[in-house]
Image 1 (cartoon, helix red, strand yellow):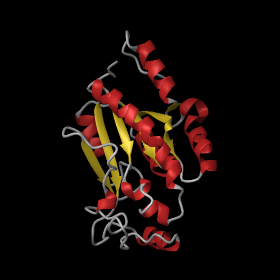
Image 2 (cartoon, rainbow, N blue to C red):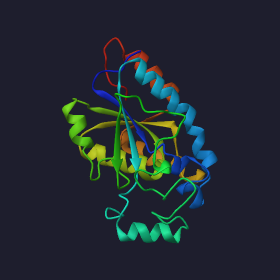
Image 3 (tube, helix red, strand yellow):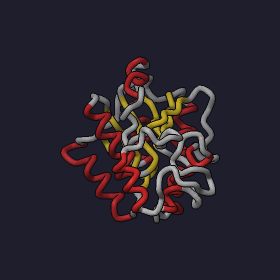
Image 4 (cartoon, rainbow, N blue to C red):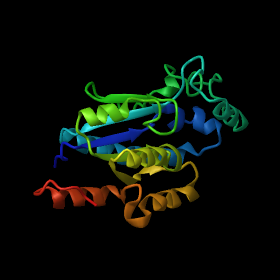
Length: 220
C-alpha cells in the first residue's frame, strides 16, 4: 500500500557507532543489545516504504575529522562518559565521518536512490540541508524511526514541528538509551493531542494507512 507522495520515511542514526557492541554507544555504557531490537521493525518500515515508492532518508550523527564542528561542551561530555568523540576504537575514530563506525549498519544497506544526511548535532535539521530537500520534494509528513528516542529522534521531531512538518514517530521502531526513558519520551511527543506529532506502533500505522488509502488522507 503506497504512502502519499508527501510522506517520507526518516531513519535516524542506525549507525554502527550506536548499534555495534564495539562502537561509541557501548563505550558510553549504553546497552546496544536493547537498541538493536529496533532493527527488525525499521527493516519492515523500509521494505514497506520502498515497495510503495516512498522517499527514504537516512541520517548519521558524526563530526569532521578535525572535530571543528564538534562543540567543546559536547566533546567534554563524551570524554566524561568514557567515549570521547574522535578517540580511536575498533570501528575507527568514534563518531567521525568516514570511519567504519560512522556508517549505517549492514542490516539495512542504503539504496542508490536514497539520501543520507550527515549531521553534527542531534536534530537532523541542525546545520544540514534536510529542510531544503524536503520542501523541494513537497514533503509534508515525516515518519520517524531510529535511535535514540529521547535524543536524536526527539530533537528531530521537535525541530520538524517548529518548521511546519507533521511527524509520526513509530514507537516500536525507536529505542531510548535507557529503558525507563522510552515511554516518557514518547508521551512527551503525544501530549496535548500530539504536540510533536502522532505516536503510533508499526501495526497502528499500517492500519491507519490502510483505512486512509481511499482518501489518501493522513493518519492522526
